[in-house]
Image (cartoon, rainbow, N blue to C red; front, side, top):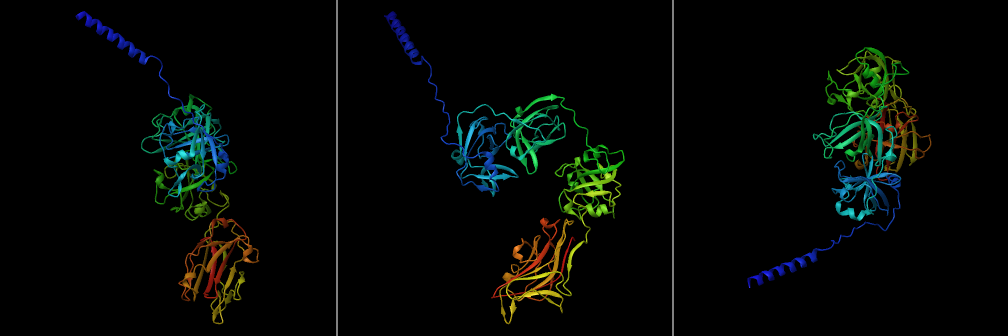
Length: 569
């Protein structure tokens, strides 16, 4: 009996094993691969979309663009954004979603239905997204699926266009580019230290052309060491204001580094003559030899008053208001931001050079080019140009020498009459007239016990402001007997360059703000303050100012004006 049960158990195990084996025998069924497709076409190129941009707006037309993903957020150097590119241009997509690279891999074709999203720019970089605090921001994640559509599987990884550093043009912004035979300046440093969010590194070619390589501390290669030698660098060309930038997608965008490359050019240029002046790099290179010569560069600021030795950027004024008239700082580029690349020029006391060039009295000289004679020796503890003769003929300032303070372009006190001004009546029978007893010009729409609607202009003679870099309009005036609500709207100041003596309406006029108005209920004169001549009229001929008076049949004030002056101080 015992043998019988052992036999029965063995048969059971054999049958069970056979049944189990038959259940798992064969291949598993693989899940189907879903290939995304779209059933519509692009109707606008990226270049045409960007060309239509003028200011931040929601796109209201049924615009569809298509492009290949050339950059995404996989390395962390781009955050919540990616870049697509078609045959005409590229554009950045700002999307409020992380890990975009899981869906939008390099080489993936993407269609974008633009209606309902915003186009804007972040300091000149045009992008698509949504509005945030009045500026361009990220498209909310819940909106992405309604606007972005993948088509097919990712294709081959995009290939960059090879260009040179002196071939940077706006049409290539947000496209994939490559630069060959280039080198980094900060060899041996890491790309982005963790002490700041983003770090700029300079990339240059053998001719000294440069571009900023900008890297986030959150990128997966932020701690990698910047290689030595020459190589090829690929990335997305970008712009921040007037500064060209390059964004690496990952560390593989660097290749072929280590070679010697072309020899760098000698530092700086020029022979030091008036016609062939030293540039700023050459002037810095020749420091310590007390060489005299001409140096040319752009005025980018001045050392602050009270500083005796420069130790940091905080010792400089790089924007108005300026505090010192003793010096200016020259750079090879008007957009230079590193004072270590500059040279400080001494402006001798009492010289025409100081009077014409210093930024304290001439803030509009900022960014102008200066060619000046002097001796190359240390000033404020850094590269300098000193012992400048500073006389007329020993310096050349872009646009000519600024007229010295005190230059008067118009001076009409109205003591004996209307002078060279013109009174023009547009509406009404009353008009500007001269008061010989009190020596001023006056205008009122009030006559015979009632007010009368008027529009009357008091127009100056033409002024030549071709040499002016700054000018101000001053005058004394009083207003009385009018409605206080209309005080500033009915008594205004205007300026033009194309008035020809006919009706004021035939010319183009721009209103100039009057800084100070009188109380409006007395005959007390007040000075109107210094009304700045707008920059567009500086350097122009045939510049005229005009006082425009308005009143109605229900109210009319009296406006009296005297001591009109236009000068540069």
